Image (cartoon, rainbow, N blue to C red; front, side, top):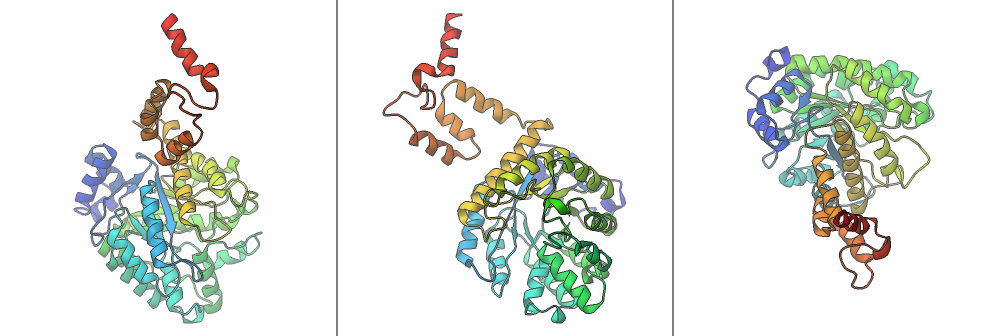
Length: 427
C-alpha cells in the first residue's frame, strides 16, 4: 500500500480483507493492494455483526446487488424480509434497502440483524420521510443525522447523490424523462426551493468524517442517470460524472472507500464508451451499474433487456451489477420478481466473467457440459445457476418412464448425444 488512500486506511478492515480473499480464492496481499489503490472495495461496517465480507472490483468475480424494500403504498416488513432471504438464496452478493415510509428504520434494523452480505441504503429517502415529504423541512443537519444513524446501525455502503449540482438541473429538465432517480429528484427540488447547492456536496467533509469513523463505503449515486435511451450519454449525465470523479479523489484523500454508480438506460453501442469513460474520469474506482437497460419497449421483460446490457457492462468495466426485475417501470417487485432479477443478473455477470477469462470462471461451464454428455442429470442440476427450476422443467417434460439417456425434446431415436456416444463406441 503506497498511495495516500492506503496510508489513510492503514490497519483498517484487515480481517475483512482476509475473509474476502478466502472467498475469492486469491491471496490476501492482492486484495490489500487493490483496495489500497482504490480499485476495489470491501463494504464492511464493523457494527454489521453477521457480515461475511466480499470484495468488489475488476480483478474479482462480478458481483450482484438486489434492491428490496417497501414503498409508501405497498408491502410489509414480513414480505420484505422474505424477499431479502430469497435474494440471498438466489445468489445476491449485496442487498440494498430502498424502503420509504415511517417503518423503514425498523425494517432496516431487522434486515441488518440477519443479512450476511454487504448491506446498503439511500439515506436521502429516510431523511425526506422524516421531513414529512416536504423539501422545505429538509435540511443538511437532518440528512447528516440520518447518515450517522444508519452508519451506527451497521450499514456497509450508502448511495449518496453528491454529484448532482444546482447547475446540472437545467440540463436534466430538457430530457425526455427528466430526472428518474428518486434521490436525484428530491435533491433537485430542494436546490430549486432553497436556491442553494446540493447539501450533501456542500457538507461533504462532514459526510466523510461519518463514513470514515464507521468504515462505511460510499457509493456515489447517479442522480442524473438516463431514464430512457433517448437521454443516454447526454450533457447532464456526463456533467454529474465529472463531479463524481472529483468526489472519488476526495474520498480517497480522507481514507474512505468509494465506488461509483452508473447509467440506467443506454443503447448497446454506447455501453463500452460509458464504461471506459467512467474508469478514466473516476480513476478505476469500482463501477456499479443498473443494467444498463438497452431498449425501452419491453416492460415486463426488463430483467432481460438489462441482462443484455449488463453482460456488456461487466465485460467492459463494471464490477457490481444492480439487478433489474420483471416489475421494473411497472410496480413493486414480488418475491418471484426478486428471484428472477437475481438469477438473470447472475447469468450476465457469469457470461462476462467467462468472456474476460477470469480465472476459474469457465470451470463450471465445462463441468456441466461433461454432465450433459454423460446424461448425469443430478450433476447438471447441481451445477445449474437455478437448480430447482432446471430440475422442475426436466421432470415436468419427462415422457412416461423414459430412461435417463435422453430427454423429451428429441426423444430417444433423434438424440444427438446418444448417437455421439454410439459413434465413440464404434470408432
